[in-house]
Image (cartoon, rainbow over all chains, first blue to last red; front, side, top):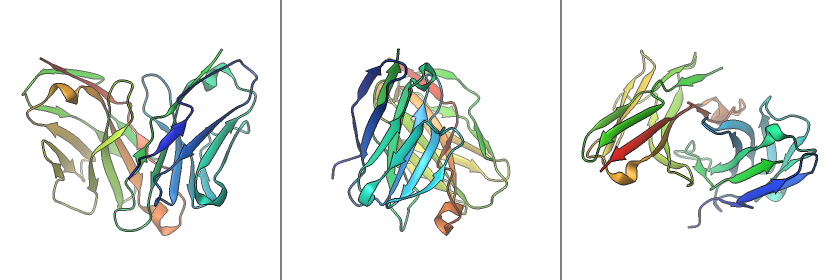
Length: 115
Length: 120
């Protein structure tokens, strides 16, 4: 059983560029979450999918951020016109609906550096 | 909105000692789950232990146990016989069960973490 995977692991970009991250959840998990973690802080919730439907978005998710989960499998998180304040670790997690549904398993994260 | 507070930014103990990490939370809800996650340096977040709020019995997982005090909204983690590999950031996290009733979800709410260092 493979865990949650994320690609790329590191991304360096210049301010104003667009970036896209990918997350592949655990195969039987129908729920997928994105979080952002800045240095010295705990992760902060960004958005959540159940299957292909995006059910919740945090106020942290500005209009420059968009997430998709076509066909309820992998998900992408795109940041347009990146700013230096977007520099952070972007974490993806997945969980399954059913008994003990609430346990989220995390991927290794994508570290974004905006120059 | 829920909040999670970890009042110990850093702790250091000797190998084989027992250490307790504190966590308090604030919520108006009655049904929720609490978690401790471990994040080793440059490695991914790993679930340590979980607790359902409706259960009075404290959860245990091998050397890890919790002291869950619902009325006090306290959820501490005890690590017995600490090992060098326990060195990591430890995060306490909360999630409401409302999401599982179709009421929407805010995801996990995390504390700021406690950096635990196990000294040889």
